[in-house]
Length: 90
Image (cartoon, rainbow, N blue to C red; front, side, top):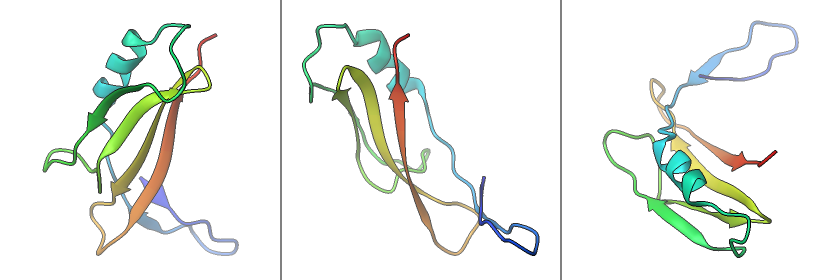
């Protein structure tokens, strides 16, 4: 769920979206410590079942598995949110 931030009034709901983490976790399982930067693990395409506004790429960035997403908000007239998922090995 996405909310705005109001100072003097209650925050307003701006919509919601879901993220399917299974493609990201599959990429995490493929990742090794010797993977070169910018290695692409997979592309995730928008479908009626996910909230992706456009194709999303999962790749290696500075030794981490990273996915950049633009999600189309639901239950609202219009709106999108940009986010980044990163898997940081401990």
